[in-house]
Amino acid sequence: MGPLPFLLPFAELEVGQHLYWQLGNLRLHGQVFMTSWIVIGALLALVIVGTRKMERDPRGVQNLLEFLWDYIRDLARTQIGEKAYRDWMPFIGTLFLFIFVSNWGGALVPWRLIKLPSGELGAPTADINTTVALALLVSLSYFYAGLSRKGLRYFEYYVHPTPIMLPFKIVEDFTKPLSLSFRLFGNILADELVVAVLVFLVPLVLPVPVMFLGLFTSAIQALIFATLAAYYIGEAVEEHH
Amino acid sequence: MTSLLLFGATEGGLFDFDATLPLMAVQVVLLTFILNSLFFRPVGKVVEERESFVTSSRAEAKQKLAEVEKLESDLRNQLKAARQAAQKLINDAEEDSDKLYREALALATAEANASREQARKEIDSQREAAMNQLKADAAQIGDLIVERLLAAK
Image 1 (cartoon, rainbow over the protein chains, first blue to last red):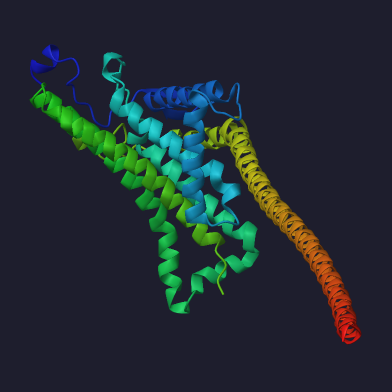
Image 2 (tube, each protein chain N blue to C red; image 1 turned 180 degrees about the horizontal axis):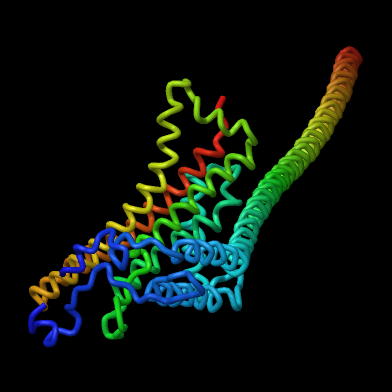
């Protein structure tokens, strides 16, 4: 990378390098887990602080938590429908909060100050393993939601409204997790790369608007992921007439 | 930047799938359950309790307002009735006093008329009596004059 990285400790660019942890004969991406634990810890800390002393007249962090709860309820209710949204609200909400905090954590926390032997810390959602895990969970959830609510009648959905739809619906089951995971992964990784490249080229002023754009993208991506997950579940539990 | 070329390489790369995937999934599922019991359920309980509290207090307030309005209209009606009763009382009293006055006036007028009539009658009868007396006296005097004249002849 030339002599520049020595002058600019934030500007190093490493893609596709990981800090490997060996667990038995399993290999893990250590940096992903480290940041995900920080994200989960931050979420739990926020939740515990906010729910410690809840009152009818909300105060302090409880306001924020209630705002989030309301937001997630609206999201789940509009996508899943009045009947089933209560069961799936925690899942949708967890997806949204985890992705949102991961994305913003990746964009806001100066991880590069912490040196790792290999790879670098960043948003857990910039790793394909995380996004595929989340997308597969969504796939499992909507299958489970449909099957548990409608039993085998769930498969009527595949020939609805006509049997011609069958191959498309089957293909959809594969494209849904694929698009979910790659959309999130691509956006977050691209955002990190753009910021890193800009910081590498022009270390002052110019990256700032791109960073704001990155924050915007990060929030939007969390919203899109949660909305689509809720929409897929809603589609699976919807009753056809 | 050479690491960008590591797509799909066995070691590292952007699409390096390994045990991170299932463990991350397990982690997220666990997080879902933890957040459900620490966040979604308690906050949902508080929010829904508040929503029902607001709804019930609003209904209560509405009911109280209706009650107040009803009481107000009752009072207004009562006031109106009382005013009417008072007005009627005044009118009655006025009428009564008017009647009494008229009666008394009529009585007095009648009495006055009667006594005047009586006085006139008395006067008439006395005059008549006096006239008769005068007539009788005149006839007597006439007779006397005639007698005297006759006697003087």
